[in-house]
Amino acid sequence: MTGMIIVWIVVFVAALIVEAASFALVSIWFAAGALGALIAASLGASVTVQLIVFAILAGLLLLFTRPLLKKLFPHKFIPTNSELEIGKTAVVIEAIDNAAGKGRVRLGGVDWSAVTESGENIPEGEIVKVKEIRSTKLIVEAGLSDTKNLNKEN
Image 1: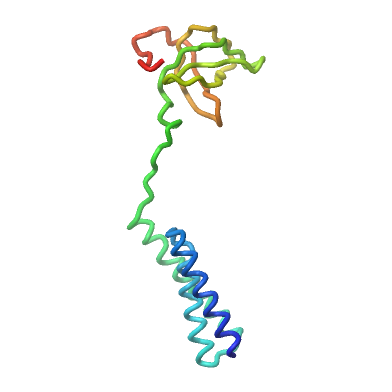
Image 2: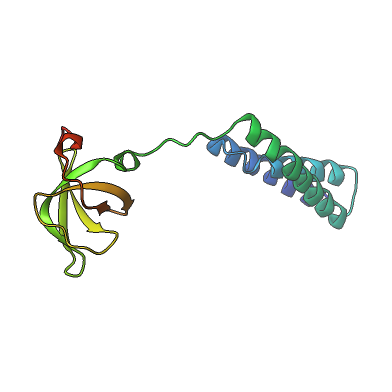
């Protein structure tokens, strides 16, 4: 029995350390389950009962408290810089040809690789609109000849 008490203390402390390091509400339920199993072990319960107490306590707390805590502390989405570029206009600085794997645009003073969603070729000097970003490539749309919508940084 003493061996299981030590095991549950180690599991409890490890779960608390992981939770303190992450603050992600990932392992707090395992700490609570380990505490329940530690109490069961201290009272002389068999290893099977200890494991059942651990699983049920951790599972029930996870099931019932996580949704509540997610509502109380909603995770707000903060767009990255690249996501802020969607919808902006850019200037084609190297003709876009999807088949040849070529094409570059200048957006906000930065040169990007670019392809068109439709597969059409776009000549150098045209103005395009950013539709999507995939990895390090901009997916652009042609047909924006109105230069008054062009971003000032370009």
